[in-house]
Image (cartoon, rainbow, N blue to C red):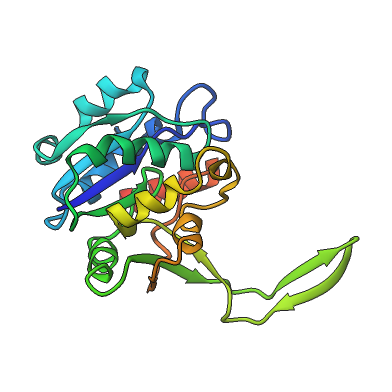
Length: 228
């Protein structure tokens, strides 16, 4: 079974104070609804679990496409940091998990994710422990010490990560459990537990259209693409 874990608990300080970013409305639908239309209706996704605050769950469910409601397995509680939210979702899913299950972790604030990218992430798990979409960094990156350039990374060797990330569920859950109780607080990115556990991860070409909504500029960009 392929289970999508949608992270919809992020706050919206840079978009709308007091409203989670995924619940901001764009062209008459919340960002999370646009995301669910892409991820939840994908034919390879069998179940959908959503991390969201309790006060927003009713409206998220009410806007959920009917096809997604049929796959919907429930809500999980957000954590103080992103990795806590992921762990809460994993804990909810694990009691009914099978050995062969795949977890597809996706940010609700990436609503323009393509069907092809979802498929590529899932299909990477046939041969690997996980599949991670990435984009190459276009500029040269420098390391600085004491306000001086210390070293640099060559172009083509550094990437930025996107979601959806796909993992063999039980291996990824075990990788996160190893970091409890305190090391998980220092995790900077959701791929890190898998790397620390030695999981074999495939790199998948990402998609420039699969950008994350963080700022008002991102929001205006999303409106243009949805309008088109």
